[in-house]
Length: 310
Image 1 (cartoon, rainbow, N blue to C red):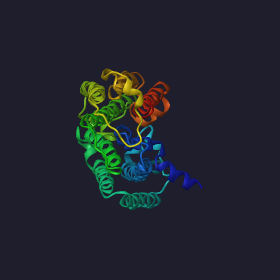
Image 2: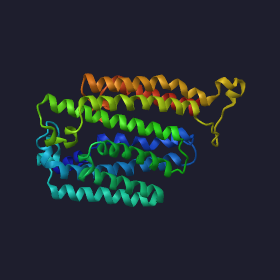
Image 3: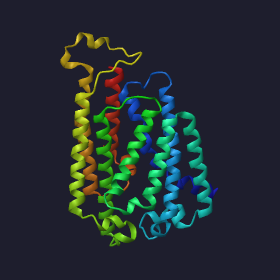
Image 4: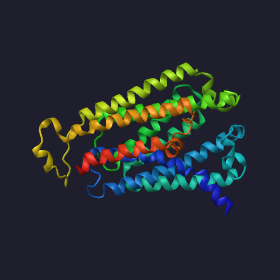
């Protein structure tokens, strides 16, 4: 029973929240409630969760020697010795193989997006996370592949400004993660090279500049996306109410009212990075910081209401 719990813990189920990115294309394309598209995307979420868990286990096996000296990572099942390398390898193979088999049944292009995600993260674990800038770009690429996977599985077009928003947000989260890691290790008097070699090449001022740059591009590209979002008329959509409104208030422009919510979310996350040093684990920040969680929920409800219910 203990080994089962350690296996589940090593899969890092709490980090599956990152795979919610696969739902973005179906929401903003207007096909959330059309046919069986939502079922397909739920399967895509589950498959990306399986493959990401396999990747996390691979990362923990490779990084176990370093993790044993980390203030928090040393508690992971593999680093702490609670889970043997052999059992972890078997679990990784089961999760990875299951994900690839399921992906092949869903869509060929989706399958290759999952394969690309797997290759990307193997490269990240073995090489790219040791190279400045490439380490951050690799993290961002993982989010982009998730979004593309969600689009492939239902065969929808993605707006260029939406893609730029995803890229900016993922880079913002990745740089914030590095900034918080630097602050944490500095505060504990830990050696950067022992835990995260790329931090030796970054400086606080440089990471601050990166954070500000991508914080700005995140809300700005999202604002442009809402301003320029093309009209869509998927099957079953009812917009009789808007037939009586002037063109100034057409539904495609109503997305603009979500921009202030996004700006607040970006500012709140920056506050957590600099005041409370919580950016090291973005998924934990989202799940534990009440104001940020409420902001994301409000934004999601507003988007669904504007695009589907008004």
